[in-house]
Image 1: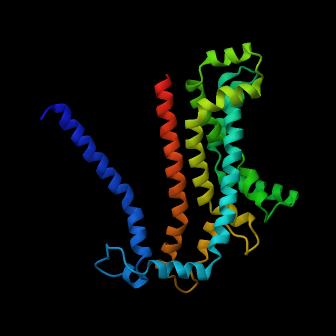
Image 2: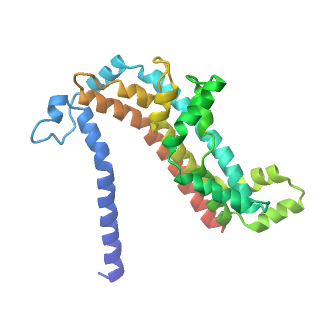
Image 3: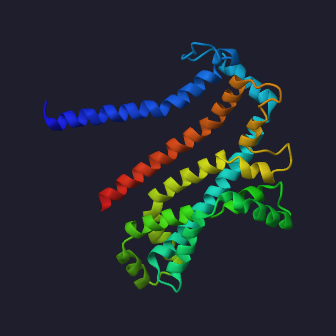
Length: 275
């Protein structure tokens, strides 16, 4: 066997090991969700999937408005994701391909916001939304997350290398304005970067707990993560039911990731063939 084949085989083995390590937490969640709480704390621990999965899922549906909370979370996640993709890509396109006074200063200030803990902005944001009368509404979940520094930074770095200056110059010669250049030149090239940013944003909003806990004051309108927290009892916790709820909340994310990742890889491959 040649050295190259040995290296390839070792690389495949390492990748397979990494995949197994990455999948084990999900498998362990399924194991805990499909057993009872005494089984979870038994010794030696049970490593096989049990037969109580649907029973535990039924307990989740009996204790919280799971589908109502999922719908609210889905609307908020889609709303934030769409706004982030639009505003962040628009700002990134301007930062990457346009010269304007104060560009570097503004971008430096944008990067400086990375050093500010998100928790410091909770009180000012809450006070502002309270002045608008948005507390407890979907607007309080969506509008504050409409743009973020990471998305602008990511898309700006991607746009700098992915969009040739010649395309921008050709569009200007054809008389295209800024928004037409953004729509016809920028967006088609930025699709792989947008796919990643969309997945990243959707998952972050879906899993967010602290901000929805603060602004959603109506106990009948809670996001999924806040609703799942209600499964923890005061005097005792049915951990198998909690894990079943966690499993049910993760399943939509897996679908989003598979769809988005497929689009991301397909767009990257298409771009590689073009260039």
